[in-house]
Length: 340
Ligand code: DAH
Image 1 (cartoon, rainbow, N blue to C red):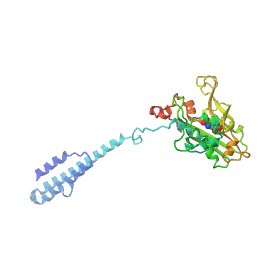
Image 2: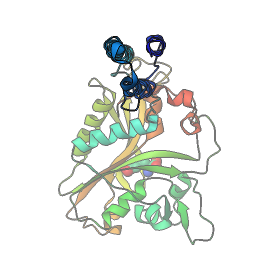
Image 3: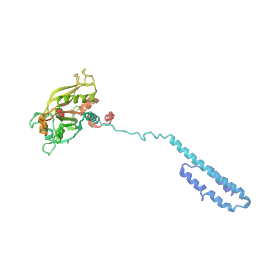
Image 4: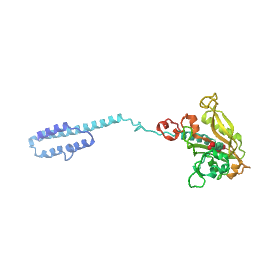
């Protein structure tokens, strides 16, 4: 019996546990009601009376030693886990998060929307596959008017006079035919033209159209809204210049230039020495366009404008090749980290 006790003592002294489960298995093996030490206690009855005292003391001491040893193992397991908690930074991002970036055209479009929203404009849109009436007819392009040749249109096969809209001015018509003035909308969207693709032209691009119709709207309103827009977009020291132009849907019509932000009017390669950069077309809505779209031109007047988003993005970011906007090269897209 004494040697059995000594044997168990040695065994217990060298016990190790790598984790909670192993430790629990050891506890059950030695200290539970059916464990090795309990078995010793059962055998205690057969110990001769003169040895009971010595053996009893040894068994009690063994039980104490086993309990201590297992508690010690438990304590060291706990500190091991604490150590790993110490080196674990719970505030760290769990993995290097690859965040996407907004497309440069989205950034510019959102900035334009933001500026006009603050001036009270709301958003409108219309279909990209449009009919001839909304793109041309209702915008005062006569059937044989040479202005139709200004845009090389993609026609949709099968549909009679269905086409891919060549400008967002079609949305002006979509809005006017269902809205009683006051109207104050901008319409961002994609447009299509049958152009040979190069660094400076593409078969699709993006525009933002603007339309403002109310009583007593004048050219002064047009000029002030566009000046405010230009200064918000390009900086407070920006000047604008309106040059007479022609569009079938506006009269009078103008093209707007902004002062070159690179040379501030001195003349440089970006503005080709002129000090000015053309950014949009605009004008007073032709009375005939109002009438064609169900609006009383005796009561209401309005102004409209249209700009290319790629053109403006080029000025803001100096993108040399238009094709980069639609190639989705991640090295290009990653350059744009704006908040918009
Ligand atoms: N639709 C014209 C274009 O695509 C741009 C334009 C010019 C829009 C004058 C307008 C405007 O609303 O008033 O070239």
